[in-house]
Image 1: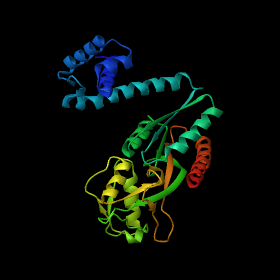
Image 2: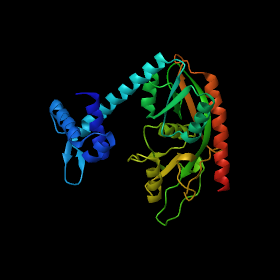
Image 3: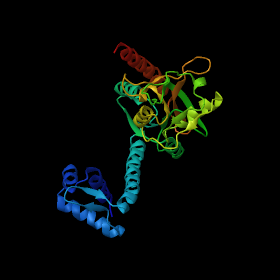
Image 4: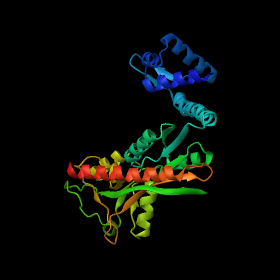
Length: 302
């Protein structure tokens, strides 16, 4: 077993085809098939089901693939660590982020930073909240962008904020309840996604307001599914403005008891031992705020 064989296996799984995977990896299909067959012998089970139309993972292959992805990710981390040690003048900043974060203005700000600092490189990785916490502890990322404060001995800085929107459930008549006031949502069923930190943040907000809600028994895997289920009348949703699709959405600002619009903050969090330059993050915050404000203006004009 070697790393190249693992890369080839992942390529076949992603392409769903030996021929397409061979073309993408620039290797002959017989060589690729031989590598997969060798892996299957070494692991003791079939990794793929082969039909005339498609190649798909067996249940055994589906069980093994995430472990292989972890090995390949670890290999990448080794190379990055070596680069950081051997080329200290080359500043590599590894940024992990929650799916709940509005990444576009942050990414544009960091691109501007790189243009002004050619010796720097920024690498992004999307992670669950728990994975971000673990990666910070292991120092496999330098900065975590989350919608909640991390635990432990860490520093944090608010990068930007945006409003939370309420997605009313559609009634049987096809009409939506238009109230976005949190005081009127007592007893409402709310649809949540898990892993990004948003569910905990919204749940805490309702508890602090002493407004009881019911969590929908099912689980949505994406913010778009939350919208679709609200349209189907399964429950209501609460999402950051950046995660709501299209101007035709029925989403309305979620208002707190005092009438203010509920806001969600993006936090940059890092361990005190990593040595991230606070000036870098302050620069990113100011540039991100300016970019986000421009996006809001353009959206309003459109």
